[in-house]
Length: 232
Image (cartoon, rainbow, N blue to C red; front, side, top):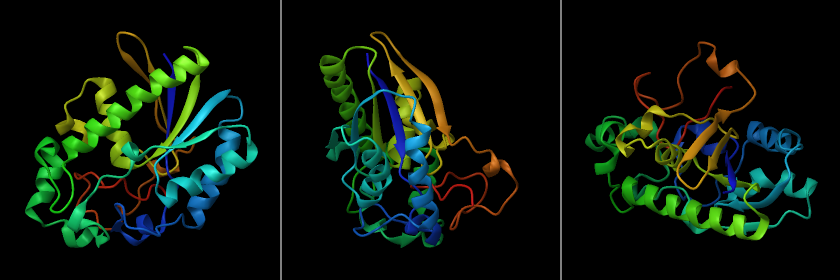
């Protein structure tokens, strides 16, 4: 079956402002995010890509623009089911304002029970994203063969939930997974099981150096809801 290359969008203005963007309109890549997106064609240059699939949000569209400019023959498809989690009333708020909310502990430690007020549950988020990937895997294989590779640009929590599914991890464990902005996560699907080939690959180890946590983070024990800003 097809090999999926998941791209988290480049660093956004919301990431650096410590905001939980969610589906808030008008969230664009910042200067660093634009640089990350510009490097994407070179990182994927050796791969014969069959298609590109994207979340409908602006920051994903901007992340794929350089790749599509370099490969004008590459078909682009928009997929609503890989849209960012609908954080409802939390959307657009400072993460620092949410760290002491009682729901945050549930989000961190019991994600399968977390449902955002006015939004969706994390369980529903994972289910729709997994369904989308399964459908696209079948479509890409039918059109391009079992060895085809394709790119899907989405969001931190979506990608983490897809990795958890591929590894057979309960959703309650998905906060143990981390993917930086514009990182590549590769999952090769087969008839009987998926294989995680790459996880959050940026080709850059600078993010391992000691540094202050993401804006709005409560402690080093907590996952960055929404994905975080990555290395400076």
